[in-house]
Image 1 (cartoon, rainbow, N blue to C red):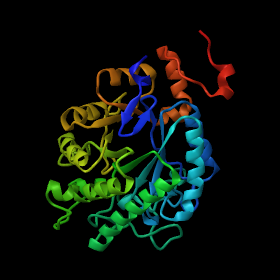
Image 2: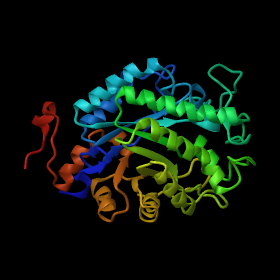
Image 3: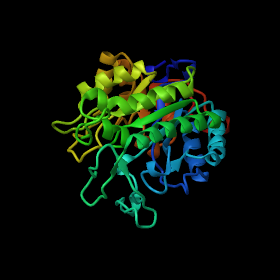
Length: 356
């Protein structure tokens, strides 16, 4: 059997293979509620044979949404539909994960296909954004309000409340979104955090909020199920956050109860990123080796051989598939065929299974 289709045990949870569907925003919710689109989108990828399907960035508060059409888990009424989706995913023999998120200064925007522009707070569908410091993400964006101590405590409380709701919905894995220029990344990067209190200045202070939320979510989530953290390993900008910082942060997150670092990059400032196949894998490899924590590799991983080689070389422990899974929801089934592995197909699809 290939490494890609070998199981992985994290705490009391077993992934049947090493393929995870990365969380990908669908911008298709109303008032944060999931609907039939999300059932079919997430469900089809479970049918496709992935070990774990991660739900898109799910806002822990209304102001934490990227757009007004983001998924949310800030109230009890949002649990019911999510539980239906989780139950369907489980029925396919797949684990269900949820990524809890707060967009920080990158919130209050149009849907991407409508232009993705910032929506001022005094316009329909807009609201006041928040950040560690009053620095906008891009020219033309409104000025975010710097979070005070009360606002910071609200963020922590919102994550705890959302984690409790995720338990009620039946999720197997929770991931804290601390990448791509969203709130926690804004705090730990020196490019966006200019505070002078205990949440700014030194490395430890800039990392404090993420560490506090990680510890609080772990305490809420319990010790049996996995907790992932998605970070941006580098800002791709001189003077910004870099891989050396990420190694240190990852070790600190492990001490707070994190099990795996979902290793992405960029998004906090406009930067030139050298895109190429597997361009972020080296970051996952370094964090795995130097911080001693499980990692996930993501970013232009598009075929079975490439994914399997990353694992064989011990550069990461799981592979997160994003855009390739949009092109091919059944990527795991096809990858197994390519690598010569025998894995179950849904009984409803057995008649189409290639025969040796």
